[in-house]
Figure (cartoon, rainbow, N blue to C red):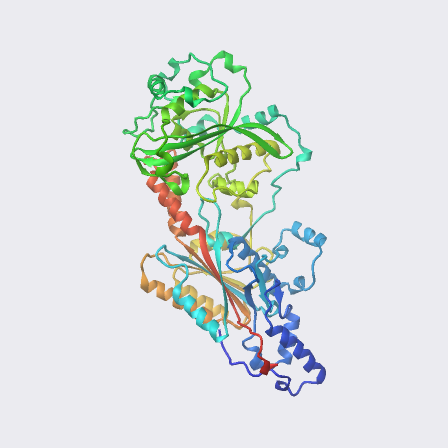
Length: 638
């Protein structure tokens, strides 16, 4: 950013001005220079005021003055969602293109009317933002930077440059920790910054709906996974010719009492009626049991019960083994509140030695499992004695829980499938579904099987109650940030596949320049920044993919610093950083291939852990908002 030493700001600096203009200049100058971060805006608020100030002020004094993005007082140290940066970006674009929209306060009624139009002009500033001199903004540049895991999210040399430049008084840099996405499906910075979700009626009004328990169950039966899809999604199925049908001499009990099931009897029973399934590994000697073993004519007339189920697993030599199981039973849904009863919540001692407790996800530790004596066979018998073939089991990615319990049950609802995106490829995490549809925060630390079982059950019950409108908008429903910006001059530079996915696939007037390398992207950004024809918005994606490549990292940092140095004092620069996204995306693609019904190779626990680690790495990032470090004048300058 070009820098000039500030001259003394006195009324004498403009001797040709009349008394009235001098008075006006003094007021404008005080507003320009006095930064206030208690509210959302301070300084010069409109382009009209900015032009007035520039005409009256000495040109040497306006050269360093411009806009800045700061964190409001008492909001320091916050961690924000990526969508809030998108809202701020959209607000700034609105300020450039439609300044009159920001000049006057908007009534609640008018704001509601504008929101219904679903345009870029309806965004509001995030609650942590304080913008100084928004009326001076002439252009915005955004750099989306993807880094390998080995590179620091701070970009140390860039941060040192910003600190030294801030000390000289010509650059204001605001650094914010950012979460780019929720759940376990990796999303890029572009997904957060370049799209809005279309408005959906997530919930119908409860007072307009009345359903009995029987009607809810009937709706749930319409959500059951069909046999062919059960097989496609990897659910365990009974092998024809197995011994499972040979034993049917008991009637299911009304409750589960683990104390009455001895390990010796349970082991003998499972050995008698258990069976192997085709996809079992050779060294996996744990037998499966099936609920249709207990089917009899006396049960067919009984109403189906509805249960939520979730398990926590640990890793042993044979793969995943059960460590905790929770089952909750649906009781009622009234006034928007679901009531349940916990039927089972048991810790289970794995049969094989534990290699990894997966504590971060399971909550299991050696101390937790050390006193446990209950074994898988006892859990199997308890389930066999309690579950009826017509009962409905609800869970999230329930095939994993059924495999862990070595249980075959035909009537299941999988919320990962029920709420998947319209493209049928994207599955949302339970955490994301709970946050978006139920406004509940779960899995803040490790997972809790009781909490997860209840959340999955509530999602299914609410879907049965409210219908298909109870759903998360998918990527197909997204609106591009560029919608409504046909009058803007926009340039986007980056890899061809990124341009196709996020820029050129949407109808807009954006200038799209395909460059794979950072050096070429930098040249394009600098050329458009300095163009005589004003560019409103520049967006560029830069990728540093090689691990431990110090030379490439230095070139990246040099390029970022050069963009900062050459930006106009009236422009805003957004730098967004994300680690390990490409690795997470690659592993997810491999998982989908392995999970395909045509796949010959399986997806291991180690691969799943690598994917989860990569997703965690890419979820959190850093954002810098860079502008002019306008400071309040000293007493001598007043």
